[in-house]
Each structure stands twice: as C-alpha cells, then as structure tokens.
Image (cartoon, rainbow, N blue to C red; front, side):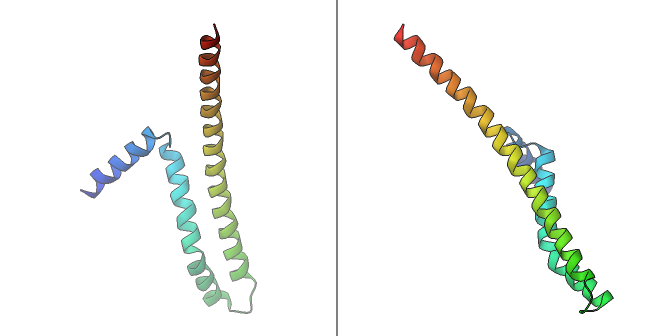
Length: 100
C-alpha cells in the first residue's frame, strides 16, 4: 500500500512538472536539515563540547542543505518563468488576432 501511494505521489508530482530527481534532492535537503542537530550532538560527544568540530560539522550540513534547497528553488523558478513567457506569447498572439 505504501509503495503504491509513493508511486502515485511521484506520478502526481511529475505531472505537475516536478521530476523525480528534483524530488530526491528536496528530500535529501530536508533530511540533512533535520539531521543537523543529531550530527552536532554526535560530533560533540566524540570530540567534546569545547571542540570546533561539532560546530563546523553542523554548519557544513546546514550550508549543504540550504544549497540543495536553493538549487531546487531556482530550477522551479526558471521553469515557471519559461512557462509564463510561453503564456505571455500566447496571450499577445490572441490579442493580435483579435485586432485583425
């Protein structure tokens, strides 16, 4: 049941113009963001609370998560711009035909 539902969700997202690669990147970005505090705690336990390694590790994971999220966002914005330009062209063609 869950695999059927997941397959349906992926198909629905693809029909909305979101590829499975973009969906995976988005999920990885969210997983990294959620795992950041756990990674910080694990590194703090291993290297101690006075070490910079836990802070740098958490910062690195946070930057990577944000970069992945922004990459997906810019791809979606480009896709929306292209589709809106196509709609504008269609609208201007319709207005031109009405004037004739």
